[in-house]
Image: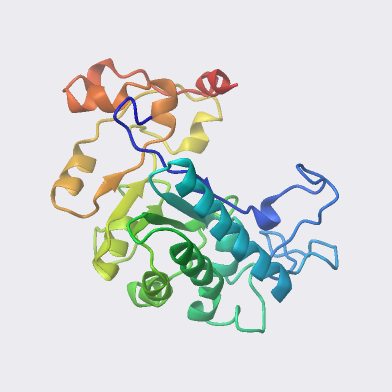
Length: 277
């Protein structure tokens, strides 16, 4: 990556209750979450599934160790995956966090686990080593989920993360062009930047004219323009744009956009995923 003039960051995850029982690398390990619940709110059915304070301390330490290893290996930063219903997000979301200790309750308390991970990572790596935090309102299988019902509630969630030392916030939506709250056309990343003043990354069906789930239902692939994306970027609604599926189909997507050759872009479709194996 560096030889080609690029930069690279690993994305650090713990999938929590999204993991299937018996999955590797340790099949005998229980599926765990903040309160021993699946994403739909049903019990996981194992008394070991509710994380203890010792478990939380170990997980926080593991994130910090992984970030330190990434810096030592020569990466250019790390991204902490706190979105889409994975473990950190399970703490942020009231549907899966029913704890009655200091990690559960109101939005600020539910942010404690995420903030402690950020603080531990920030303490372990160099001050100039970027720490990105990815977050979302929606969850896998719960696309209408909301961490925050309005900008004021979102600010309560974001403030502990900013104070813990996040450098960049990656605000994931399913469609980047949709407003996040009533009364403004700002998308999720736009609100995150407005509230915190930190650099924000937007993402969500960039370069696609359909939400990604329709692609998996056999609909014909196509490419949509990104004029609105460039307009929003130009007025500093957000600072960076994440592109996923479009790059799987056409690794030259960014270069074609940059050089005005968008008409040459190869559209994403389901068979493109098979090229990853």
